[in-house]
Image 1 (cartoon, rainbow, N blue to C red):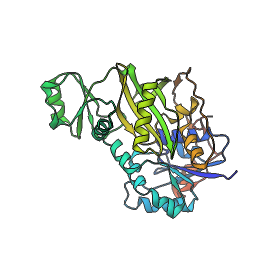
Image 2 (tube, rainbow, N blue to C red):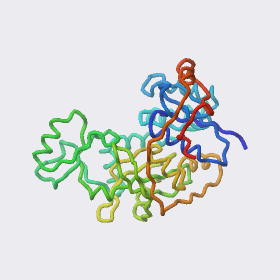
Image 3 (cartoon, rainbow, N blue to C red):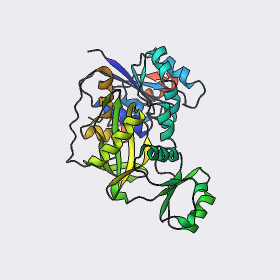
Image 4 (cartoon, rainbow, N blue to C red):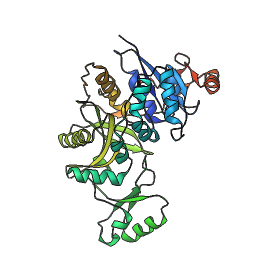
Length: 343
């Protein structure tokens, strides 16, 4: 079977490292993992077969340089592991395909831009007739007319940074006055016990199962999760993903409001919970790669499990870090002791 080469960026963060972990669990496809980051001190680089230093996604020459990298390293599939790459990669997906022969696992620019703006997400859900928490821009809301508590959050943000629970009209006025971001006011839905992070993957006409995880957060990251079968959640997530043309994996965060799943955030990429899904029997990366290359994949989800996260360490010879910093490329596989492989 032909050995394929998969590039994963953002190897210094949880998403990129999670994608690498998920790839390492695929046992019936010969794959070479090329892990990439801007810094030679990104731990995930040393869990790849090959490691690359790449420019920042905001650099004006990013696309041209990444196409050259993909051509030089014969990359079959490029999986962006950071949010900042998504819009620029989505806009250039056809260039990657035509100039380097590289397939990008990234959704349409329309979907990526919508997911990056929580207000536009709520408006899209409204247009589709799907349930969502009521949401307002500051100029649209009368603090005295709201039911409290409410949530105030940045329209563009991640990892629960800048998310405040506000208990009164006076507190809301103060909060909005003192913020230095572009805020959104949102209906407070249910409780943390009814919060789910949900993964679905779509490639062409092939759609994976939906895996809802009831999760517990610590520092904005999922550190405990339990798979839950819920037909209502699965229907809402699947309809949204298929209507909006997801390509690759996508993450939906929602809460059940008296049994109704209300989506409050969309991540148009592989989630930080990708390795958790893979451990539970549904590997989103495996689904996407096999769908691209015409191989069958039948997930067997362990619905009776609970999954916990813990710290892991990776020991890398200093010469490897120095070599990568000097040359921008190395082949670290076998030179490190790592728990990133997720075996």
